Length: 405
Image 1 (cartoon, rainbow, N blue to C red):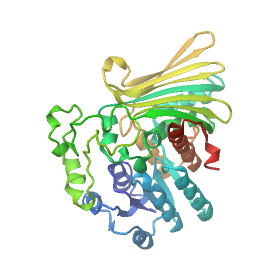
Image 2: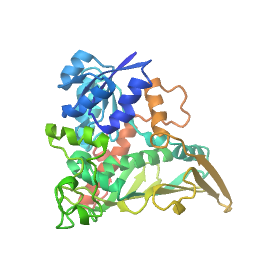
Image 3: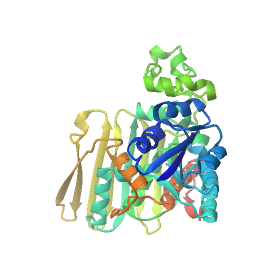
């Protein structure tokens, strides 16, 4: 029976880790405590799952003595709890991204080396049947040796805008979308290419959100311009959000419905990144956060052909006739087409959450696609985003090895 402690009482932690551990993995796991700077959210876990609350992280570590600490705090504080957990003798499971900059990353790596404890970064995108099928085809040599990847990711003005309502909108909290969000995409592309990124160049801007209009307030629920704002949201009557966010604002003053046009926003919403891998493959990547539709497109080019993948999650259904059955197209050099159909699973993130949970909590006995990510995988995806942010700022390419060895 392994003991787990939680730090960071987020909604993601509740659904992804706490509830499954308490209900589905209770035969092999016990959640021995939770700590969060906002006690009100910890109390939610206690009311609904019976998890003991601690008002101090170190006290929780000393008294509960967990085997694993699951870190789901604001990204900018991941490093603090990852390091302290290892120093207390626990292994760590960290929600992506590993952290937000190279200094914090190096501190984690130094502590891991010094303590010998294990750090696992969770990348559920590897576990989706669709991205996994792409990996299987590439591993099987469907297009030969990979030479380049083009990937476009587009967030809509529901999901995309939500990053600008929350703590993610400040670079110091999240590292921006190139760290917080794109770490998923960089990881699965690194995994597909089966190589480590070397050099990164990027451009970016805050072109849609942020202080673009005078008619704005502090938050949606008190805004006098609500009737005229196309991005207004009404969360206060949502039972979960009311109990988990609005009713506990007194503890830390955090607003879940912040204005997407706030002058506090300093992350990018329009980005393009170019990556060169150590073995020579190239990646061209873009992310925009203000689209009418949401999803991604990827084209992988190789010495023997071309693979095309496309997935959408919102917008006009006609744009994705295979909403339930995804399609992968592979063209060879004779322009012959092979089409593969992949069923969409039920569950969190298309069934990927449940597959990842099984790997995390019951262990990996057979992993032919290499879906279980290592600490190095977490570092590699993080550092593409970190170097991209640096490149946007100074207009120069940056080598990852200059920052993390």
